[in-house]
Image (cartoon, rainbow, N blue to C red; front, top):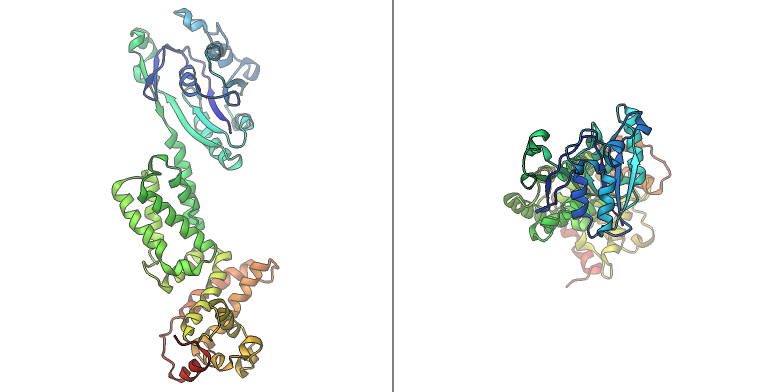
Length: 457
């Protein structure tokens, strides 16, 4: 993994000043790059890089920042000898004094057209390697470069897994016009280096918000919270991040038991309230969390089937077909398994009884009507008869069959059911789910069956 310093060199005749960076004052310098490299790169190694991009007569037909400020003796109207020395010379002096990263310089076009902007984009992007940690000096970047560079680095984050560590801006203008600054003693020319990294974070926050609103995915939100170094040790933030990750994982893996338990929503809501009150996270993240809080209002803070129905609604709202159909199919089985758990035969594990119930639900229509039970069901036909006589089971079977067919089509990748049909089928899910909510009944007629087949504690 490399550390990479990137800067675009301008054409002005820059005035000496001291830059305040990381709480320390640089020596008097004309180029902000000299101050930043001296401070930022002092512990870097030979594998790291310093990239300087400039315009040039060769690239644009006019004297550019290469001739005026990269090379020596570029400026014509000089007032002292320091203005004769170019940035190349200054960086070589730093290397002679222990700065180890290799300095590489590259010419770019002027950026006056869309074609030229994309040319600059390609030039910078091609220099990046997978995993680079990027430190970007935006001080002298001209025209549209600051804007598209932020887009570029976010693009590189996805394509090359790079990481934008900081965006720095040397605010020389705080001192006033250059001609006025020249009249000030050098020791009084103190210009702050401003951290603009959060501007780039805004685009990342947009992606996080889009991932939540458009796709129902909160993994990026979880990762953004975890990446907040300042708050990583705050226990409420850590628990909040965990609960968000759990929501994503449980829906992704169809973990009905965990979804039904409601533990993750309790953890989320309690820690969200604390974090919002204490302001441990940035305002954009808090706004996204507020939206997530609204989006999850159907979940309840206890072990309840309503949590599974809320998860199903979540997948429907966000077009998560690969989760919706398996969730609904497993939910139907779970409801009836729970309803008839008092009839679970002795020696049956939960997995065995789940298969028993699902086999009844999925039995061919003729066998179901005639109670012609096969395989393991036939050994416990009296229990199967009781379940099959339940009007709720009878009502839901056709719905269950359509859900199972859709799930199998998705799981096996055979295209048996077309995308449009799967989308259309979603509209009937809520109606079908509602049929799973009849009142539980006590079946006195099953007591003899219970004595014969079910283990009594």
